[in-house]
Image 1 (cartoon, rainbow, N blue to C red):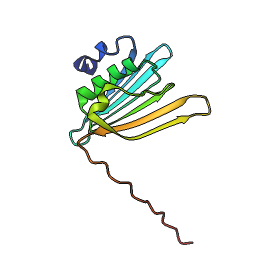
Image 2: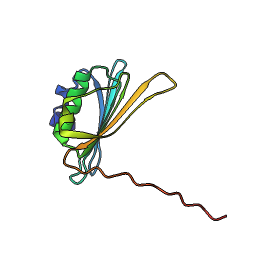
Image 3: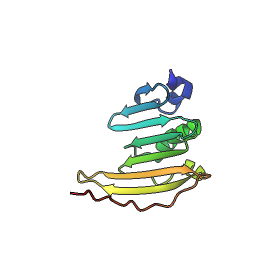
Image 4: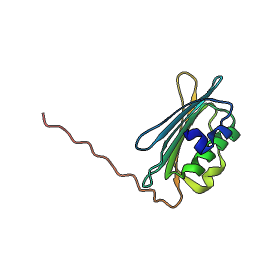
Length: 138
């Protein structure tokens, strides 16, 4: 089982887990414990590896432990971190990655959503380009 191979049970032992291994590559894991959840999606391709992590956990140490484990295991080119109430300010892995973008938004239901996208430091961040719309002939 992939969880045993990745030693995830050591990091997330208090969660009920549902996970799936995709063919030819990819892994998704959903964990729930009472009213707390997290979801991880991994695309471990050598040319463009990626990890996303979404959670409503409040404990930054727990978030950092889980995400550090995934980042150190898969060494993704980029990863996304999405948190709800309150946002995660910092975790240790950010020393090896730089933030590409960040967004915080309060939803009408009262949730505060925080999104961060990070990339390896040795990558280039490209300047945004203007996208022009094409007008259709009538």
